[in-house]
Length: 626
Image 1: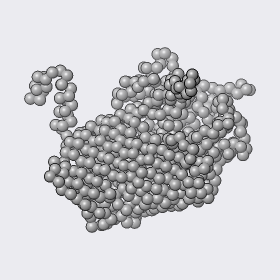
Image 2: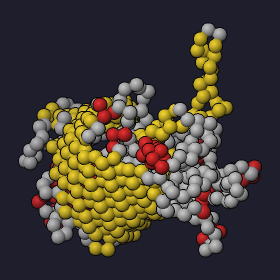
Image 3: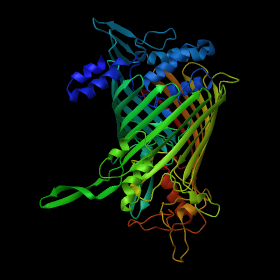
Image 4: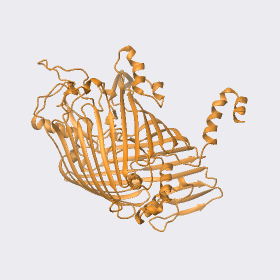
C-alpha cells in the first residue's frame, strides 16, 4: 500500500515520502541524540569503570557519546544491579537523574540528598527545576527541553604568580517528536592575573626576526583561539548542532570537540586538542556489534592566501588589502566492530584538503579518500592532498583488565620498508592498559605510552598539515616525540575521585617536512625522513600531580589539584641539517642558534612562561556545567 501511494504522488514528493517512511515508521523511543561534551569527564570515567568491570559493553573508540547512548548504558547497568557495590549503585542513581529526560521522565528528589527539586504540573507539560537546571517534558513526551546555566572559576598559583580562569554562559538542549535534536551553548572565557604577563597558558612564544609569534604549547590543555586583547586572554566557545535521527542512525550539522581512538590520556588519531570545528556528521548503528562514523569538517587554516583579500578604505584616498585565510577541509570515516564483549576494533581513513571549494567526492561517507585524491589531482601532476589511515583495538582478556592500542599512518611508501632504505614512514602508535576494580572496587591503575615519528602530522605544503587553528589534531606532542602517562585513581564514595599521576613528555630534534632531498653547502644529502628519530632531546616535561574531583550535584563539581612540574629544554650538540628548526629570521631563512640561546628558544616555543622550569602549582575551582 505504501509503494502504491508513493506512485500516485508527484515525482518531486516521492523522495520526501521515502525519507518520512524510514524516519518515522521504523523509529523507536530513543530520544535526544545530543552529544555529551567530553570535558565532562566524570560520566565517561564511570562508564569506563563499568565496562572494564564487565558490567556493560560500550564503544570506547569514538567520543563524544550521545546522551541517549549514555542513558541506555546506565539503564543496562541498572538491570545488573547485583554486579555493583554500594558506591557504584549510588553513582548510578546519581547519574540517572542527569539523564532523566532521555528516559522520558523528570529528575526527582533522591534519598542521597544534595539536590533541591521544585516541580510544576501544567495542563500540557511537566517542569522541574534542579541542579539548577530547568527541565521541560510535555505530557505526550514529544517535546523535551533542558536549560542549564554555565558558570565557573579556576585559580592557579605557583612561583610565577596567580592565574584566574573564569567562564559563564548557557546551555540549551531540545528534542522534538523523538526525531529531531537541537542544542547550543555559549561559554565566554577570560584568563587573567599577574601570571599572565608575557604568557598565555595555551601558547609558547618564539621570536621570528623582531616579531614574537605564538605557537601551540606542548601540553594537554585543549586549544583555543584568543580574541585580540592587550591584557590577559579572552575567548568564546560556542557549540551546538542539529541532528535528525532514528533508531539506526543520525545525520546532522554540529560544532563539537570529538576524539577517535582508544586512549585515557590523549589519543593519537583525533584528540580534541584543537578548538571545535563545524562539521556535517553521519552515524550509523544498525546493530549492537557495528558502528559507522563519518564527518566532513571546515578547518581554520591560519595560513594566508595571498590571492584572496578584501580591499579596505583605511584613509581618504588610501586602500589596504586585508588578506584572508586559505580554505581547509577534512573528511574522515571510522568503522567500529564489537564482535564480542572481549574485543573491539576499528579502522578508517581521512583526508585534509585545501581546494578553493568543498569537493563533492569527499562527501561520500564510505570511501578510501586517497584513491579519490589520485583521481582528482594526479592527472595534472600536482601534489596530492594529505591523507591518513588509522586503526584502533581494545581487548578485554578478563574482567577488570583492558588492553588497547591505536595506530596512525600519515604517509606510506613500500620502499621505506627495505633495510637498505634509511627513510622511515611517518607513523604514530599508542599502547595502554587499564586495571580496574580488583582487588579493591573503585581502584584503577592506568598506563599509556605514545610515540610519533619524524614528520608525522606534517605535510610539505603547510596548509595541509594535520592541524586546525594551528593546533595538532592528533597527539599534542606532535612528531618526533614520545609520551608516558601513569595514573592511580580511587573512587571511595559517590562522585568523589582521587587521582595520583605522572606524565613524562619528550620532544626530540624538530624538523620542517621538506619532501625532496636537501643538499647542504658541501653537497651532502639530508632527507628529513632519513634522520634518526628519538636521537637528541630538545625539550622535556615531567609532571607529578594529585587531583581530587567531587561532583556536588549533577554537572556541578569542585576540584583541587597539586602538581610538581619540571619543564626544561636542551641544545643539540650535533651539526644542524637543512630544514631543522633552530630559529628563523623574519624572511623565513633559518638561524643556527646554539647553547643557552637555543635552549631558551625551545623552552619559550613549547612552554608558556608561567610553567617554565621547576614549579609547584596549586589549582582549585568550582563550576556549574564544565
